[in-house]
Structure formats: C-alpha cells, structure tokens
Amino acid sequence: MKRRFSTVLRQLRRSAVVKIAGSASPQRQAVASLVLLVLTEVALLALTFCTNFLSAFIHNTLEVFHDFRLRSLDNAQAIVSLERSMGIFVEQALQSWHEKHVGGWSFWNTYYAGVHPVVTVVFLVFILLRMFAWKLTRVNWKRLNEGVSPPSAAPAAAAASTADYAPLSSSESLYYAPENTTAAVTRGAFHDMTPAQQYRFLRSVWVLGAWVAFFGFLFGPTMPPRLLPVCDFFNSEGANVGACLNTEYTFVDSIGAHGSLLWDWNDESVKTLNNPYAAFPSQHTIFAAWCALTWIHLVGPAASHLSVRSARYWLRGLFRWSIVLYPMVTIYCIVITANHFIADALGGLIALAFSYAVVYFYYSYRSRHVVHSKEMPSTLLPY
Image (cartoon, rainbow, N blue to C red; front, top):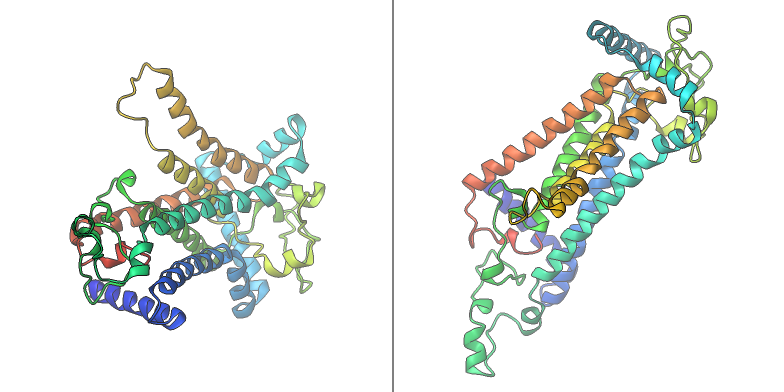
C-alpha cells in the first residue's frame, strides 16, 4: 500500500508539472518541477512556523477563554508541584540571581523575541538552498535540449554517452541523472545521503517536532511562569490572562518590565495572534536543539586519517560541537525571562528526541524495504 501511495503521489506531481509547463517542453517541465518543489517546501515550513498562532486560533474558536485559562493554570501548578518534588524548582531563584548579578535585560528579552525565529530560518533556508543547488546539478540540461534520442554526430561520442541516454521507462520523465551518480536510498549513515535526502531527513525532524509541540499546546496548555503572579495583563478581548497568585510566586515578566527591541506583549498583533499558554513543550528549545543537531550532522566527524593527537582533529571537534552552546544559552534565556519552566525545556528536548527517533527508524525501514534502482525515479529529479 505504501508503494502504491508513493506511485500515486509521484504521478500527481508529474501531472501538475505537465499542466503548468505543458507536455511539449522538457526544459519548462524541469524548471517548473524545481520551482514547484521549492514552493511546496516553503509552504510546509511556513505552516509549521505558524503552529503557535494556529493553536491560539483553535482555542479561541472552540473554547471559552476562562476555561482555557483555568486549564493552563492547573497544568502550570502541576509542573511546579512536579519540579518541587524533584528538587528542580529553581526558576524564581535563578531569575532573582540574574537580576542582581547579570542584568542586561534588553539583550536577553531581544534574544528571546528574535533569535529563536531568525536562527531557525537561516538553518532551514541553508539546507533548502543546498538541496535545490544539488537538484540543479542532477538535471541533464543537454539531454533536455536534445530529447531522448542518443547523439548521432560521432560514433565514438555516441558510444561514450550511451549510459547517459539509456531509454527511460514510462514512469520516468526527462529528468535524468547518469547511472554513476544516481541517488541511493540511505542506509542509515547521514553522510552517505544525498543533499536532498539530508534535507528531507532534517526537515522532517524539525516539522515533526514542531507539530508535537502543537498538540501539546492544544491538549496541555500551560501558563508560563511570568503570568502566575500577574493580575493586570489582558488579551485583545479584555479578559485577564494572568493567575493573580502574587503571594505565592515572585516571577517578573522581564519583557513587560524592561521591554525588548522587537516587540512587547502589549502589542495588539501579539495579543491577537499569540497563544499565551503555549509553554509546554518549549518550541524555543525544540528549534534551538534542532539547529544544533543540524549543524552537528552537516559538519560531520573528523576525517578518519586525522590523528587524535593532531590539532586539526580537536579544532574540527570544537568547531562541530561548540554549537551545543546555542540551545544551552536559549534554555537559560527562556528560564530567566520567566517564559518557561525547566520542565518545558525538558519536554522540548524529549519532543525533539522523539521526532528524531521516528524519522531515523522510518529511514532505516525504508533502506531495508525499498529497492534503489530504476524502480525509484523519484530519487533522480526533482520529484
């Protein structure tokens, strides 16, 4: 059934390309297919980026805000109780320590508000463009110009090009890759994948992690620490968003108190679009950890010929693993600004680990059950 679904999906994509570019122009079909690939990927990534806003829309449409607020408060208090039982409820003390000894709230608030989306977008655009560039190199543009017949000008040249002009089956298009460069289905090692497969692997981990968080926002709304003692913060409908537990909690809403260079909670667009209870699991943590994971995978381990005693070996290791500081700083930021509990960050790491495991085992299953040969024209180009 999976094979039939893949075949149907591939045929639908090919039909869309032919309708857009026409059946008489292979060149236009190649360009249209590549453009369609990028547009569909951008649409998927953009929709995934809007999961917070989508969860807010669903809650505002289907649920009375008062009930939504009470559920989120119950979940937040459950997290506080769990953290206290585990001895890790240190968020208030950590924020107070930061206030006394570090400060710099404008930086940390702006980091929370802006670095999270910007860095993630940079990583996504990079792996998308990397995949697109590789796809361009897989199109035999000369063949598209000359058609499916082998060149006949010089017998020697024709013999040398026989592999490049092997007959295509009815399920294949004029998109073509020579046999010695055909993309192979991954067998589990990331560095053995093509850039297109690496993109799909990393993108799938990110997308799945973000949608796991989305379902957490839907079914387990959680009030962030900053709203527990607040009594005077209202949403766009005039309803109180905070819990008014100012005798039990001393959290300070750092963005509300000190502001950021980008936006404020009182901005009308933020009040309208943002889900104030989208705290568990932390998408900031998921996205930051995913960026680190992507960097580690793309940089790869040191070459086998390098000695452990060589400076290049350790410099490469430092270059590869220093990215781990990014999610660590992000977790510190979301805690000291009182936007997340430590449990929210742990939930984000678990959500990403779950997403990675699902995608990894899917690819492992695929490598064992899919024959990578002429039965797999979708590995050639672009679909």
